Length: 303
Image 1 (cartoon, rainbow, N blue to C red):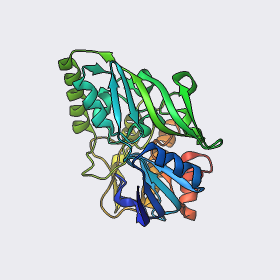
Image 2 (image 1 turned 90 degrees about the vertical axis):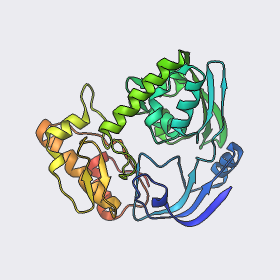
Image 3 (image 1 turned 135 degrees about the vertical axis):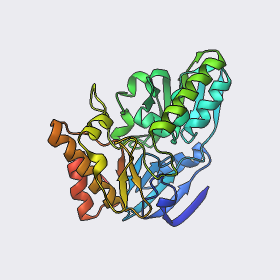
Image 4 (image 1 turned 180 degrees about the horizontal axis):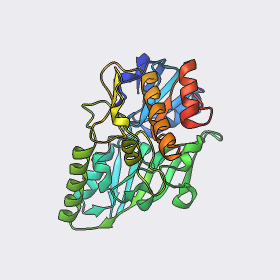
């Protein structure tokens, strides 16, 4: 297992933002991960760090990165994957086995752990549609437990994992047999859409900034509210889609939060709609970050 002290977490985040963390652990076996979860007191578990904003102030605790847990198995129409399996990889591999249901993962930069945590979805598909069961670590009992789909509390961009009690170790999915050419065609459409509308990671970003309100689009609301005209020295709104923030190169987490608050307020002032962030803030907050987070998340966030 790889262990690094005083690690600059920005080197791993897709936003290229984040200060030093006390200790970074990269386990390569599920048993190593569960042992860490049993013995460490102060920790955060992350995958590809693709949908987070990590504080430039860093984190005075331990960070566990799951990307070393990359085993998966295809048995008939069932797929078993560890939490660190990359989304595009599993999407590609099941397509080669003529299995449909995970085509939407082809363009997502995250891991299975993050996909289940967020009930990731795109193009009319989502994790909950094909999810069967999960192997979880219970942080209260320090035991490994199993939960079926009905126990996962899935909803839009939400699962039981948001409550903080459980950490996903692996997941099981039930897919459907389809002709390979049909699956490939859908995956190509998904990739083309992302390349046309959304920024690549060559422009550091953390994906969609805000969740879509019910029966509406956060991108549409933000665009109509005029946020593309906002001009900041270190961050900007993506010119092709108003729900993405780009790090120009030297942005801090406070810069991003400041822009997020202005985006949030622009929509609230025009439509009286309060958008909810999809990007998750993590780390030791400064006093200013505390204020900005309380506006955006409307609750006192845990470190």
